[in-house]
Image 1 (cartoon, rainbow, N blue to C red):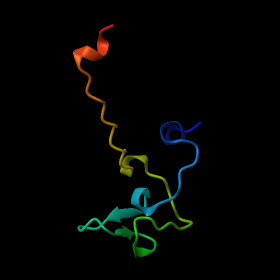
Image 2 (cartoon, rainbow, N blue to C red):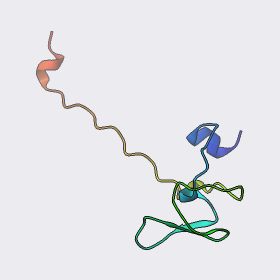
Image 3 (tube, one colour):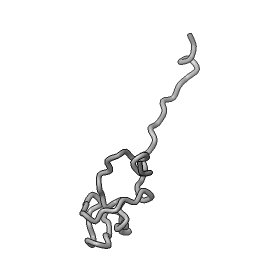
Length: 73
């Protein structure tokens, strides 16, 4: 079992936003691919190489606020 399959699940959908060949442009809306040129972040091609350090994690869920009354019987 590889590391990325444990961290992000077994099936990772290819995307240029976390490909080894791509790097984001200054405006952040497009990706400069070393193989295909300027592409959309959601574009994918057969040269996709997964780079786990380029993947941005989702924000953690906010926990609800509890008051002391919630814990009284």
